[in-house]
Length: 309
Image (cartoon, rainbow, N blue to C red; front, side, top):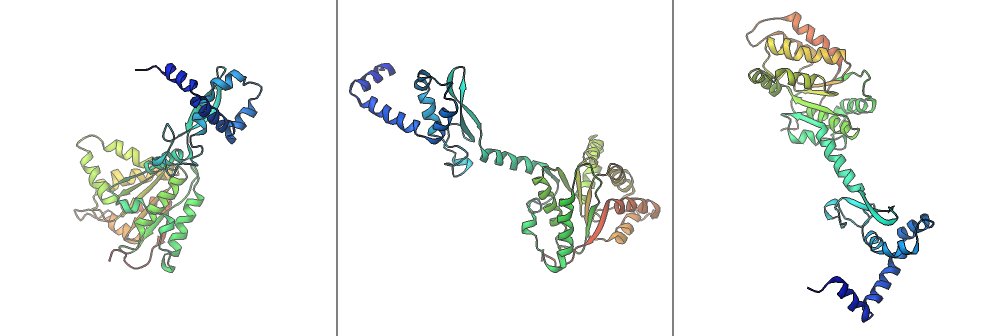
């Protein structure tokens, strides 16, 4: 195989290489970003540095900066996809440093935001909800306004009352929670939406594998917790007093915002909490849980037609 030096000598001998190299050099030196770099480092760059660094300058000039030449991250034209070049002087030579490009920053940020919205047993369409896709009819105006205000007023570490969305089946209560979660994620705020009936079933099964305490700790410490469809579960004294009660108590003491959705209003939910699956009436314990819910959230009646029909 012929060596590169031999090839270059042959190209130089017939003049073709020299002409192409001269044209390339002129094109590179007329590149606006290259000219700016050379002007800013005029005192540091010697003629020899410029000549030996010409291929680095060529590499830089023919790549996309600030994603200007790339239709998308997946169609990035650069040598390192998702990274764009920056000219630097390194140890007395012109060199290239690759930094994360704006599109990759946005893509990484979006993935991070999606991870911030953690859910347990919540439909995917709820996780994709946003204020832009909310049905803002006259009947839902109060609920949508309350949701938007909650996000606007949210400040980590500050006491803020949550929202208790209640209403008939299919009026969009869970969708409102999903929209709030997505808006909070834009602010880099972690939230957790849990479907209460499935959560409580999972809590019962967690006793056997010794993960109950870890799950309760994770839920009760979440910056913004959303309990979806509370009241739809089969209530037991153990769930009410050993799981729900401690979670709400901790969040009340630590001023952690908590939101709810339910088919019951406060009175209906208290009645639901009063009677266990065995038919036992424990009104005082139910009142104690409701006292915490009233402290944590303001009731908002969500009206409208059943969207599931």
